[in-house]
Length: 352
Image 1: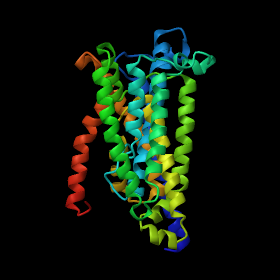
Image 2 (image 1 turned 180 degrees about the vertical axis):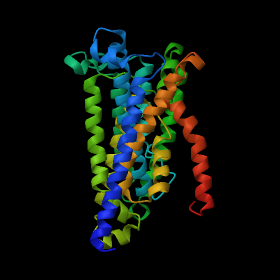
Image 3 (image 1 turned 45 degrees about the horizontal axis):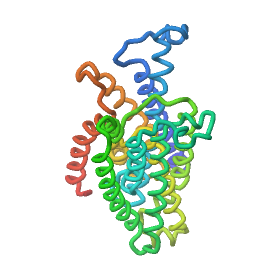
Image 4 (image 1 turned 90 degrees about the vertical axis):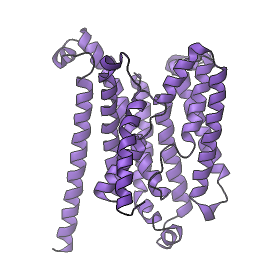
């Protein structure tokens, strides 16, 4: 087979994979907006805007499915990027301290009873004043933790990328202790809300919030995809990558910032949803290899489908438990056993 034919075959295979995963994400999204605890008629929802079916479809299920797809894509892509950057298949999107800062910020806002940004800045008007205060504090806390981790790990190039990882782990431990203190001192009436947020849940966000979140994730994922070829070379080691022309420090900094921004935007809206950024990249890497140029877009589509379907399971579980479990609980119940199976398989292959 000639080189041109081989390249054409590889391109066709990549396009077929993209098409299959795009179809998977679309099917998952369609199923999520169609089914739930309350059965609805799509015909009534799309033709009669005053019907109950239309209210459920447009105000509840569609925004929630969109949020799940946006957050799932961001967490999965961040996971595959950090696993490649840190050269550690067990790396999670929350390892850099982003989750700790975000959780601490939201916990403080919930503990003092702040509901909207207007309560923090009374002079602020318009749509900004109606934004969620816990989401704002969460994003600010995540941003502060990113700056702290990156600044504290400066000057340790010889141990990069592990300096940022270790700093993030230490910061997460500090944030966990601070959150425990806040919960201990909080009003019992607000403690349940704090615990629910920390367990991870998809809410019903406004269109403007969804649009802003989608723009943030698109920008962050775009940066990670644009640098995916360099990330492939970084897996060879910093010296080899530099010899091949990769600006190692700049590439690592941009990838850390992009992945952290993606996780911060996700956590600010949904709380701590684990295993999405761990399981999805693992499955894809086992199936299609370590090429980040392929893994990044497939992770975005696979992560979106995974979280949307996990949220559908959470909604369908309402009759069983008499309450809707947070989607973070569902992802943990699904992801924990699956991760152990994958870990045993990798150990059997000598890859761990």
